[in-house]
Amino acid sequence: MNIKQHSFLWLAGAVLLAGCQQNKKAEESAKAITPEEIKEKIAVLAADSLTGRKPFTAGENKATAYISSEFKKAGLEPGNNGSYLQDVPMVEITSTAAGKMDIDGGKTPLSLAATTDFVAFSRREVDSVQLKNSPMVFVGYGVVAPEYHWNDYAGLDVKGKTVVVLVSDPGFKSGRKDLFKGDTMTYYGRWTYKFEEAARQGAAGVIIVHQTEPASYGWSVVSNSNSGAKLYLTQKDKHMNRCKVEGWITEVAAKKLMADAGITGDIRAIARDKNFKAIPLNRSVSLALNNKLKYSTSHNVVGILKGTTAPQEYILYTAHWDHLGIGKPDAKGDSIYNGAVDNADGVASIIGIANAFAKAKDKPKRSIVFLAVTAEEQGLLGSEYYATHPIYPLNKTVANLNMDAIGDYGETKDIAITGKGQNDLEDYVEDIAKQDGLTTVGDRMPGSGSYYRSDHFNFAKLGVPALDINTGSISKTHGGTYGADKQKEYGETRYHQQADNYSADMDATGMVQIADIMFRIGTKLSNETTFPGWKPKSEFKAVRDKAMGK
Ligand SMILES: [Zn+2]
Image (cartoon, rainbow, N blue to C red; front, side, top):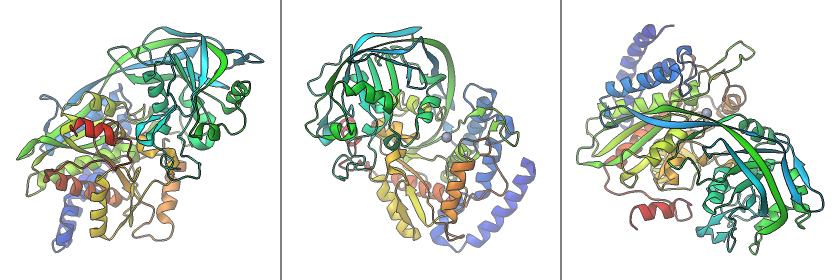
């Protein structure tokens, strides 16, 4: 079926739908966004002609042109000084170890092999970096968390040294709910944090000890995703503020490394002790990395609907437009990663929301910004760029509402809140859930740190209350385990695979359900004068309070 036929059917469907909903006053907003329009947009964005929407490809140009034109059609003004595009300059760095990782000292020197024992890379935009006899120190979880009265770096000078840290945070599998957030990962448990903190402390190198359970993935994931080219945003200081070397080692290698310093047994328990102090490993590490650099520019797409009475305050909707491009053919001979669910459906949904605002009788008082970001799949880069180069000030940004890979298995009785327990925006979801007779649930795997794994996180990190929701697992119409089965099926057979395709049988009613909730939250926020905040225990509360002058 081609697009034209599809639009015709869609129109016929919309007329019928409008007719039967006329007497359902409570569902007024549901009329504003239809499954047909969402599907029409997914069909465009996930078409083979967009070649998997990888940044810097012809697929990028087609995707960003289409989204710009949809924003325009919805009546949004260009969001970036007369343009719908925001440049996102990036650097691709391919780091290769020049040899083994040599670790001297201790009873026996160690010589670790790249990929099998360790992975190492550098963000520094230079041709090569080197650690030469850098003294190694075990700093436990490598966490500085004032709100939990925790500082693994207390009294320690790590300049020129290489720190060895554990993955996840002290709470994980501690059996204590009051230690950090228990089994729910805080940002202090995320690997990105470990690298950032080590850099703030001035360490020369930082190595994370991989353990499968707390990482929530095996060594193969670490070694696969860290060999080859990595994309970063370019930085004025060429990332010279980062450690020379960032990396991971296997648990087996780490145990050998630590045994001589008397660290044996359960290393997580040792580092979890409240009297834990960093332990010098009496060893030093040498490693050289060669870097290949390539610079390119990708684009975010941004449109704005100006508020009527408080136009200088903003509600920010986000969804990433990019996906994984073209790879090797799968069993069916399909080589294109079309990313229909991930994340053509999120983009289609925010366009749907833009149209809903355009059609609404009462115009919002605050401004509504729609941002389709690039390079999420490469490390949340487009949203990081916007958050660190905001077009509209972050302390005037009331909330970020993010949509990523919404389920295509219909409406559910439960709404999943990513990282539940973070901020006041969840209360808005609860209110709507109550009105609609729904429940809310948190992450299926709280230890995996889902809240830190999509674009909303870059706003959270800088203090903007951010919300990411999705359909749950209890199907409204199919009963039984249908929803959960569909989630599993997606995870195993389509997620980040070539089979994430558009299909005419896709059930977009769940996307509409989520888009409708997000539209209602945005509408409510846009007519308020208050700023929602973070829950007292959130790691993002302090930065927001500071930004708001509290
Ligand atoms: Zn993805």
